[in-house]
Image (tube, rainbow, N blue to C red):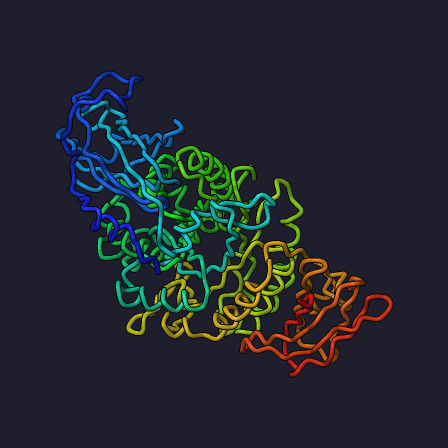
Length: 571
């Protein structure tokens, strides 16, 4: 965990987060010359202090009494670095007549800032200086910076170029009070950190599988919006803040899903844009991913105009995505759950987050076909299974399916993988399971803490740890490296990928006879071992002796189960 958190730094620096702008000497620098002079133009804030890649936060209060502050005024803060580069950061309404700004400076140095209020009132034209120090902690999200799509358009990396492996977990309803803060939330986070997860997929309060304003979706602050969506409820987001911030302090990046897709026709595009502006203002300064919506084009379960809803949702989410790109000063990667099929223009997305089914082995063909075909489409985007076969759903999709989906997706070129457990995504509790969805069916009653201990998540943890030993970001699929290998005629044969001349990783589903490794390079000395994804243990196979054609028959696997064969260049 980060030893120098935002809070601890500010405490040490003696910086207060109290509301209002501190008084100071008049200073013409930082004035917004494009707007008429306001009452605040001659007031400069006292110097503020921050840390690169960490959130600096403060508030502004208005003396003007707005009847509906959320709708009547928008406040931005424009930050300018020493080279003159500007970032326009939305501020968020935090209740009454107060707005807060959160800013994560990309590099150390001096930044000047000025406020821009849409009504040119007393919030407008305040300015000051932010002095930013270098980050000295060990939290990878702040040490290496936020994530972006790598130049190869196949995986993610940090701002400094360090590769980022997406291993996601599905906490769709993790911001509601049924996952209790702090004990339950922190317990689940600790388990996922120990297992090597890096991303938590979590929804900003507008949930699936329940009607709007269902009590199951509230947290300690209530619902995210007031009745009839008249305005946002800051108290909901205050309660959500501590959870989002805790994930980041643990080194877990939130993939923030704004809502489920069917909220777009319920709320309308203008309200959805306001929802998104609020999310960007609240959480954009953190190292996050954005997901426009879950199942973006799926109509509400009981809708009587499903065909019309699908068309409206695809059009609306395309428009909303352009809007999110335009207001996010950090340019976080943007996706939509179920991938580019949910929008009209794929260029509005930065990566494909696919949903591929929950039908145990019956979902294998759809999963492999979607993962491989998406990589052939243009524009080229990182592709990953963002929802596939929750462990235990419909009393199936057990740990062997979790291993199969992880390894086959990764070895087929996916840019990461998301796991899910039935019981966690909907946050079942022992006292009260989630219950039925609007369609009347109930997905299961396993409590979330029991689901967190299902073996599949640990098996994936072992598998990810193995990949971390190699330059996984350079892996490319190579079916030609193993015989027999999977095809659309038989998905239950081996899958292979790796780096030519360096390492080969082959996933072997249960088979009577082991496969043959083929096309081994001449002049490269290899050793091999079997890796057990159920235990993380290795079984050494010694040196690889290929024949004249570059083929090597793998020995019989230690047990009749799925195994991972690793063939690596000898040191």
